[in-house]
Image (cartoon, rainbow, N blue to C red):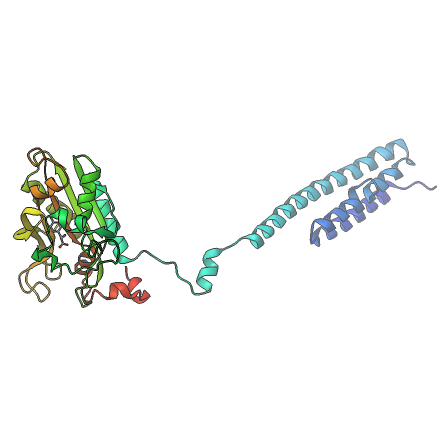
Length: 353
Ligand code: DAH
């Protein structure tokens, strides 16, 4: 066999490199890269073939030719490894891209919108937060009540005219007119006082029912929040301060509250609390009948008869209560002209809050 010259070996090496780099540029996946490795760099590949030729060469030539082949091999090996690494990373990226589940895209593309809490729920939660911040707990009671909790224990006996103002939905359950849908949240006061020992600082939000014909300011189902404080040495000033504090927290610092004498069977003395009209800010407008004030709810010092009905000694304990409509508050705050819209579930309205 005739001896190869160094130049011939260099030519062969260069040919292998040309092939290798041309193929590397056109690699389209791990498979074809592996094939190139076998064809060029493996034991059966071109480089190994070139190495085998070295055996027939003179010592000197073998050394320099070997160096040329080794140099080419390590160059190609380095570039191969680099290409392999990049390809693996790229394959992983494409895979991730394909497997990614973009839910927001699906939602927007198909025209859905995320829902939100109803204005009443949001207002109730906001009120709860304010009172929790003032040290109150949040309590709940049943919507189906006994006549005793809803009226009797609150010092509203059967003949009392206050019952007429709260026309009730009675249930066909037990004795006639003994069970009803609660007409206010005040019965929860009774439930809290019969199940907890004072000191009590609690608010009680919930749904209430009255046989009212729906109009711009009334719906037969609405929401109230009740407040109850029972402790030693509680004064009317504590009540007024509490009302001023939470009305400011809800309506902002430019709104003030005031109390006007009123009558409720379960509080003595009683008052209605009013806040600066949110529409005209106290100047006088149609909404507030030019008075500059809007009535929000009722309040007062707990009547000794109520304490007696829950077994608390009114010589030891004193307290106050208040109650107002959550729907009414939202109506005032957002200047909602007709309350019935709160029950329509029209998304064009609901979306505004
Ligand atoms: N329960 C009364 C109503 O629905 C509101 C009320 C007035 C609640 C005075 C109170 C209160 O706690 O002290 O009209």
